Image (cartoon, rainbow, N blue to C red; front, side, top):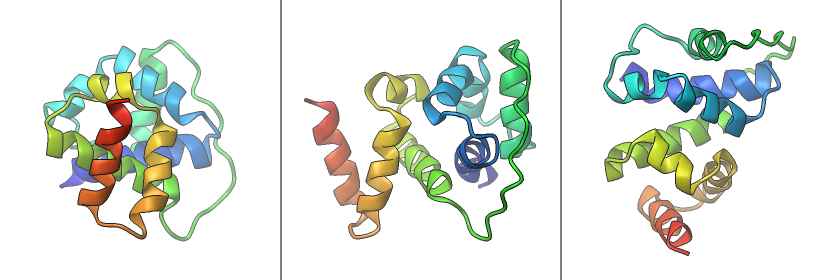
Length: 132
């Protein structure tokens, strides 16, 4: 179940602690090849922080400095990342397929809607959006 939390941890760390754009991080994740390993279940020993650092290392970019902010609870970026992974698993899509149709902000927006709706309703909204 660790991998279920990994996307949430990754995006939370990238956006909230390193002040990086979620979609840029997502694109680098896909380009460096780690997304495929994630989909195969090969990243079970990673944390969001170690995954983020390896993404940047494999992409030939310096790891950005961390912000000194501290969050007591998981952030909305964490929950949007989890929502993305739920969607991936439910519809058997690769992260590349998801990225071709959606931005991270789409999942962030859906996270806010999910607070008031069931996952099935949110998935329906996402499906309707991608078919436009």
